[in-house]
Length: 326
Image (cartoon, rainbow, N blue to C red):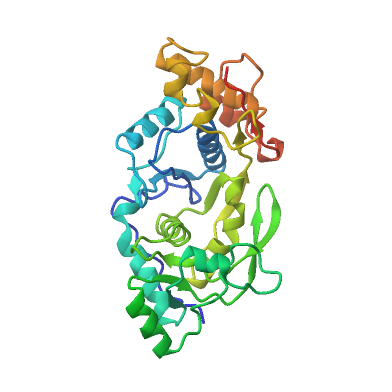
């Protein structure tokens, strides 16, 4: 049975949505490097979805993994330069561990958590259930006897914790993709090194922060069923999803530094805007992104407020944007 308990307690840094706002949207970058045009495009879309639906807009730094010194400050500077604002202070996942532990405790009390001692190689090499997608956890450690568990714990301390899922798939509704049904396996809640897993952290954070709209790249669409199922299992509200098309480089792969000048700093230093004032670089970048979203004509100067007045999800391009650095 789902562990129906009170929802996660808000963190002291969590800002309530503005008065009268219907929930909140968010942008949640990882501080592993500068934001490229694809990241900035997704941030703008998340802002537009939230602001045009009367929602608040929050910024959360997902810093549980790799953190590059100075990256967060540069990311915030770039977002502000484009005209993207947010409500309240920036929150950090590294300061929210108590909420993740609480959620795991609730699931464990309901018998929905078990230890996993498998390595990644063992999971890939293990026989899988018929018709199971590649990468689905085969359930190796799901039903170990106490003796087997003790033996594995002695040989491999520091197990991961997995959710004992009660379904094989789950359906979510996406603003752009409609109904989407995806795999739900016994996914990891906490890694062997003690780090909370992404699927757990975002579900707990979104609920605690009052986020009811999640806008992000469509490469994460396949993770939505797992997260929605976990939210429902914890008795939390499943947010509205909108998975937006990615930005690709000239070779048709996800946009990255290898493609040339793709960040505001790169554009100012060596790209087509080399030598220009940072404000001019940001303005031209915003205009470029707006054209890619069919919200502006080539060469037209725009602001985020201009785009806010023009935005309609139904008019968004449904395919990826291929960016060709100058």
